[in-house]
Image (cartoon, rainbow, N blue to C red; front, side, top):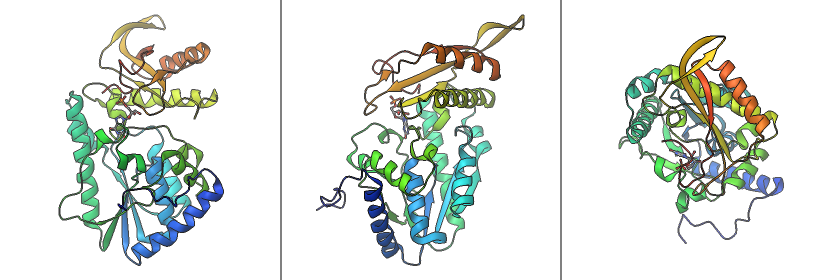
Length: 326
Ligand code: XMP
């Protein structure tokens, strides 16, 4: 049997009891594999890498070194949450890399979507590799690979595969959730005690807010994406829609239109609301939001987000549109 086929003996993990049994088995397997060596993990704060980190903390404690790269394209509060949960609460060895200027400088003036993605992917590998080279005695690299990544069934991770580490950094892989589906990873994450905000997180693209700041990224427009996204998420949570709508976010395109605020003419960006439901991200339907909620979000974004004077609601399914804008 291939190493990449889910074992028939692995029961589908649907309950906390099954998750606990899986966790115990994995802890034993991880200890057997890693021994007293050190293991490195790029911890984005997404559900897969978070669950892998939590498993490894239980299995080998301080032998795990997590690297969290802040590329400036994360959502509001994300780096803080990773530090709070993993360093402060779980006691992990966590290296936080503030690479915001480095990424944004490289991206300045770059408008082509594929070039933007390539720069982000390449820079990420470089920053991570630099951190890895500073560490002694690392023999393993942990990854949050999940079963759909192996099956390559979905489009979600296939087009953000940025390639491997440079030749001088060849580690043995540690992939404790590689036979699990997303819903099982979430059940395991919950059983490991990770916060709901992490376990039930909506999908978030590797290039982050970069693909939602359409065209050449500027710091002020990126802030408008981040702030409008935070308001949208807050209002969805208040309306009880968290976990009910598959994916929701805002986009700020690179054009301006006239508006009026306090009797003054303005010339600013629009923010676009995107909220969709899907099973596999291959096709998607627009979520039918209560209009009162839409109006509340419009009022808050136009009042609170600097540089935005108009809000648009994208009601296009996939196809013809993709879910993201780039
Ligand atoms: P599209 O825009 O192609 O998106 O309809 C489909 C799903 O994939 C997510 N997406 C990504 N996920 N890295 C990821 O991990 C990426 O580079 C990436 N690009 C898009 C997108 O958010 C949606 O859920």
